[in-house]
Every structure is written in structure tokens, then in C-alpha cells.
Length: 344
Image 1 (cartoon, rainbow, N blue to C red):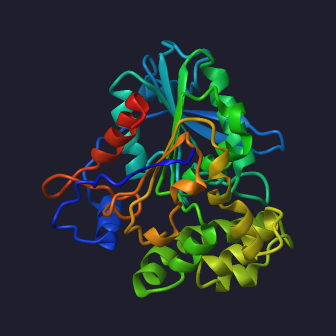
Image 2 (tube, helix red, strand yellow; image 1 turned 90 degrees about the horizontal axis):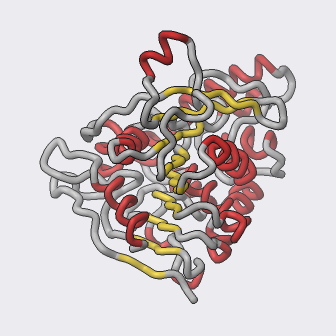
Image 3 (cartoon, rainbow, N blue to C red; image 1 turned 180 degrees about the vertical axis):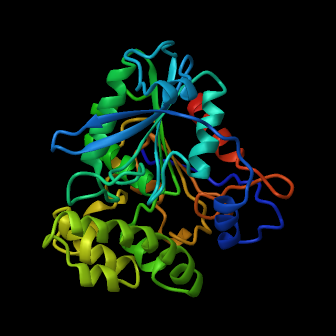
């Protein structure tokens, strides 16, 4: 059976009339609650590390920081429900959407953990590699790690933007092996990386606002990494990259085993494997998303019957602000929670 399609609108304010304003305002100005975390560092099988930020009943971040303590094992008050949240490109547990989602579920008694992709937790990782949009193997390691901390919880997974594509790709590849998850959600996931990358390379706002924002930190991290690993990175090409196509072709693709950016964007996209998803999964994409316009979104015939494609006309890229000025980010976590509770 094909996936189901939901076109119920997101209640975007009239003062945010289109995709760019909805995207930028949510990222910079919309109100949200703030969550605090206790950090756990986990070594990876290849000699690197990932940092996981936890919040759960009984965890007191301030006290843990003062004592230098790390995550207790086991957690002091294991909860019935747990959420793992994968952030987007150059995001972290401090990103506004991550804070809003975390606070919503934590206030309802859930344990929440945000694994940071390599190099995104505030400290350089140990290897020449970093992370990429199709890193489904890394997603699998992160999922296994957090599950081992709360093996009896009802686990749910959310991925946002890049993290959403990587999560959906993992779910599509492993099928029923992910059935221990109660439900999942991919939010504003660029499921067609070729289309999304090309879109970000065209138009003034895409090139001069979004692309430059990403390149600013990506280039800095990569050039610092080149000093740690001399001769492994084409410094000149990275420094001169004008868009994500050129950056990914110079660094992301070769360092992660792809022959070039076309090979990377093609093989890392989750859209071709949505039909293999066996876990109830919400795939939420606004049709006016400036990173991946509606014409590139999957149709019901491209996803399994376990998938609900929610494609509202408005919302932007991880925007979904609502309410009177200055707006808030409450609609997105509520939408996720509704799906987790009802499957619709």
C-alpha cells in the first residue's frame, strides 16, 4: 500500500507571508523555551567520539557541571517514553528547533537525548572525516547507543533537516530491524539532495544568506581540521568554495568515500529508500521550503504504507512559527507529539 498524504495547513502568521521569512524568523527570532542538558561522551568504533546531550527526570545539569560528573548509568529515574533527536547541518542541542522540541517532551516526563554529529558539539572530532547527509551507519550507532542506556523505554526518533534525511535513510535501509522504535519523524528533510543542493545554489537569498551561513562554519572547521591532518584535505578548493556543491565536492564527498558531489548527493538521498520504512514515520515538509521546493517532495507511491507524508503549503524550512508577533515554535513539537500519540 502507498503512503498516506496529509495537506492540513500549518497555522503560519500573516506577517510571515512566504518561505524565506518563515525560515529566517523561526531560526533567529521566534520565542521558545530553553532546555539544559547533561553531556555524555561516547567513543566510536573507529577511534572517534560523539557527544550526547541528555535531559531526563532526576538529571540536574547545574549540579552535574559543578561536580564534573557525566551521565549516571543507569539514569536515576528511567521514563516510559524517550526521544532521540538528530539535529540539522551545523546544528546542535542549542538550535532553536532542538530546544523547542526538547522542552516540550521533557516537560511531559520524557527522557530526551540529542546526539551531536562529529564536530558539532563545540569540540573538533579526532579524525579527518566529519558527518554527512546520508550517514545512516552513524545514525545506527547513535540509536544503538541511546537504546542501551534506556533499554525498556518506548523509544521515538526525530531527525531535522540533514538529521532527518540521515534518519529516514537509515530507517529505509534497515526495514524491520528498526521495529524497536515506537515511531519516528523526519522534519524538513532534504530527501532529494541533488534537487536541494541545486536549489540552494540558485537565487540571491539561497546563495547569499543560507549558503554563506553554512559555509562560514563548515569552512572554518574544515580548514582547522586540515592543520590536524596535513595533506588530507584540498585546502585551496575548500577555501574557494562558493556554494555547497563546491564544498561537498572538495571535502564532504572525498573524505567520506564518495567519488564526487554527484555521487554523494545521489547515494545519500533518502527518497529512494522511503519504500523500505517499516516503522510508523511522519515525514513533514512544507511545500514552500526554500531548501527543497514542493515539486521535489515524495509522492505517496514513493513511500511505504508506514509513512505519513504531511506537506502543508506554508512553513518554510524548519520554520513552522505560529501565534501573534513575535510568534513561537510550539506548533512543531505539538505536531510531532500528535503523530506519536495517534499516528495521524
